[in-house]
Structure formats: C-alpha cells, structure tokens
Amino acid sequence: MKSKYIKELLSILSNESYITAEMLAKKLQISEKTVRIKIAELNKELENTGIKVVSKARYGYILECDNHKDMSNINLNAHIFNDFEYRLKYIFEHLINNNNTYIKSDNLISALDISKTTLTNTLKIIEDNIRYYNLKIERKPNYGIKLIGKEFDIRNCIIDYYLKQQIYDKKYINKTIENIVINFIKKNDIKLSEVNLENFILYISVSIERIKENKNINDYDDDIILKDVKKEELKLARKLANILEKELNIKLNDTEIIFIAIHIASKSLLSNSENYIIQNKLDNVVQDMLDLIYNNLKIDLRDNLNLRLLLNHHMIPLDIRIRYNVLQKNPMLSDIKTNYSLAYLIASEANTVLKTYYNKEISDDEIGFLALLFQIALEENSKRKKKINILIVCGSGKTTSKLDRKSTRL
Image 1 (cartoon, rainbow, N blue to C red):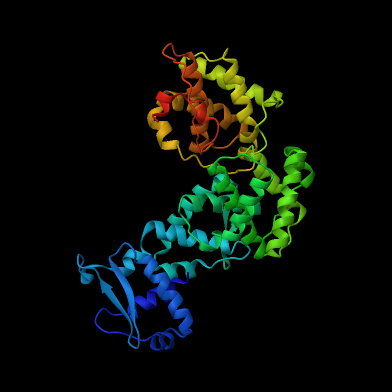
Image 2: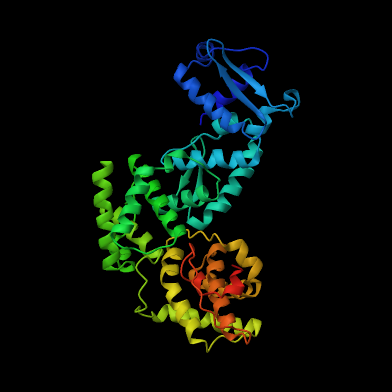
C-alpha cells in the first residue's frame, strides 16, 4: 500500500460533499482505476473507526460515520499512521519486499509522518523480532536500510509474521496452490495435522510468490542439506515441484526442491511408522533434559521408557525445525499453559538444554509441544489413572490424542 495516496485521500475526502473519481484522479495524478483501488484500501484501514468511504453513482465519494461516533472527534491520520502496530507492519513489509535494495530512511519517515527517533526505535523492535531467523537490518550512510539474510530464513519469517497477523497480504492466499497441495497430500496418502497442512500450504504459497519476484533460494550448500532429508521426502518434494511447475508455469531450481523436502521433514509427514532409528546425538539431548528436570525440579522421569521414546521421536523433526528456523504453530499453546501448568514448567526446564545445544531461543510453541509429551508421562505415573476406551480426533496431531479424557476436558 502506498500510504501517501491514503493520506492525501483523507485530506481531500469530506463528510459534507461528494467528490468524483475523476477529480480525485486529477488531484492525485493517478488513474481512476487506481483511485478505486486506494479507496478500497482506505476502507480496510478504517474498519475499526466507524467511518467508511461510500460511493454514489454520478456523485462520487463521501465519508460517512455510523450513528455512535462523532467524526469531528476522530483524528483519522493519527488512527491509521501513528498506530504502533501499523508502523511495524508497514516498515517490515517494505524491508521484506525490497530486500535486494536499500530503502531511504527519509522516505519511511515521510510516508509514516514520524520522527527519526520513532523510526530508530521501531527498527530496533523489528531487529529483535527477526534475530531468531538470522536476519538483520543493514544501515549504510547515504543509501538507507536493507534487510540482510538468506532467502529461506526470510520466507520463514514472512510465514511467522503472517500467522501472527503482523502482515496481511492477499497474494499469500492462493486457492490454486491450496488445491494443488491438498490433492497431492491425499493422492500420496500423507498423514498430517490441519495445522501442519496450513503451514505447508503457506510455505509453498510464499515460495511461489518470492520465485515470481526472482527471489530464489540459491545460497545454501545442497550436499550438506541433503543429509537432513530422507530419500522418500526428497522424492515427494520433486513430485510436488513437478506439479507446481506444470500448473503455475514456473521453474523451481534444485535447492528450492530440497527445501520443500526440508519442510516435509520438519513436519514429520513420513514419521507415522514406529520403526524409526534413535540417533545417538538426539538421545543424548533427551537424556540431558531428563537429568536436568530431576536435578532442578526433583521430578524423576529418567526411567520412563515410553517418554524417552516419545521425546526421541519428537526430536527428529524438531531438530530440523530448530536448525532451519521452521515455524511450527501450536494452536493449543494457551490451553496447555492453563491446563497443563506442571507439564509446561517441566518443558520450560528441559528447554534450557535445547537452548544450550542449539545456541538459540526456542519458541513458546515448541515448548508447548514438549509439554504435551511430559503431560503424557505425568498421567502414566498418576495413581488416579483410569483405563478408558476413547477415540480422540485432534487437528494438532497424534501427540495430543495420547492425553486422557479428563485432562483434555472433552
């Protein structure tokens, strides 16, 4: 969105008289078609103010206010352009969409009508948020600012911001891609949760848009990455890539295909079989987690073989997600913190080992998934455990379905 047009529209439009699209086009020096697009964007920004721009045939546009608000008491420019979340969103979108070029700080200051200090403080907040993805903002005198980082990390950051509603771009909603992925999943009998499906579709959609903008993944060593994916995962990725290329008339390079396989591996789409190999390095991490829980919380889970197997199984895709910064949204996080507080405390303690091992922060979403595994162990150890024949169908995956009826409050 070009905010200068929105600001100028607000300065021209009135709640007392109509103005035609032709007159607006002349004043803004844009086409009448662009005027209509900007009016639609302005109405979206005004959704929570009680004010909207309405049109009337042969008359033009006018501002209207609902019966509960007095337009004279509403500072529209302040509402739209000085809102903290709006500034974050606006600047981040510009950095993402122009990550190959520098953006003049003065242009951002002018567009948002803010001070240099406000811009500096906003950029610091953005930098804190994107550091998890190994991204940073480069500042170069006389040139401006630019987002620096690998393309795969940028895409994962876009997905995170999108799901947190810190950006909202309709170009990432693509029904064609959604249908392609869903049909592919069904045809190949791949089992995954609704959350994983949503995230996978979003990754493919974001990737296609970036590829269309000639922003390809090509800055990784393919030979190293291939060690992190199975042959089955790579085969699936190639099959999906072939369909996308044919249906969307685009070309995916070899690295793009490998990173589709990375996303498949990160979601453990092929780990429905119980016949998986325990990796020594990950088993050592699991053992360190159980030892730390005992030492710090005096809760002894070290001899719980089922928990150890569950943690080892969970660590396989988790290892991929952490090392490649792949977001795994946890829709149950709030409920987990509320209903399984002890399990979440245990998971938070275990997280200390993960932070040290990977040398990075681990998201609350991932801690929540770990808490579900510890909740299972706590229930197994509970004397009040009851044997109940019950089927739980859960969109969050099979881990949640292991919890008993009482705990899940169904």
